[in-house]
Length: 300
Image (cartoon, rainbow, N blue to C red):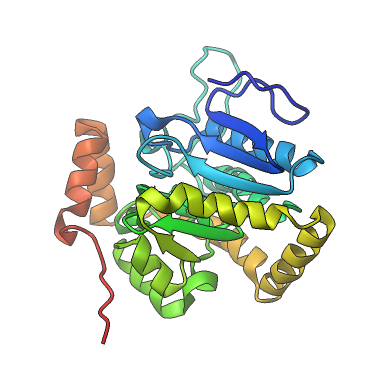
């Protein structure tokens, strides 16, 4: 792991941070875990984003994942095994997940703080999406300013089938109400190329061209003065705010917390499978009724 030391980020263990040619590249760097998001990863990511935003030698930020995936989602093993509980033996007790609406909402709001930092930065962020971009991975990606995907990327929120609702919600602002419902009501995924057709991402390119495509776009963006970049980003984001985007994020987190209290059969089965058989079996049983889990766009 890199031993970077800066004002906002010091010796990260789960993030790589590099700056070259006025472009900061932030890499989710736990490929052995498919770059899943836990409290530590989110804290380091927020620090890296603020570090890039504060540095005067950075004009543009690229967010990517190491290994085979951009990000496979939230750390369900940690959540369902009581990650939030204090295991140190000390008298300190922290809020837990899936117990009370208040505690769960509080934790989801703290996670949302890190996610929405992406939209609050003054500098534009390009998401470079390859492999799996699922659940929490889509929360991160859809909060970025520009999204470029590999054509064979897998994008979706399968957790809506039994686990909850996205705690961040930018779906409707990218692909409209019908496609947002189509994807969330089923948890089905789309390929990168179909995501581009829906407007969920800006563009999709062959996987072996993704690095060059994103680098070229980042280089073009970075050629503009940061003061102008902030002006352009801010006015578009203010328009989103006028459409309720900030309020929807808060409501999405609260709605997810409420959904965690569901005692429906599919959610109960998932929790039981996690406790008795582990994540792999729980996911297998959750997703079995949905086949390969893809929605494919027909072209006429």
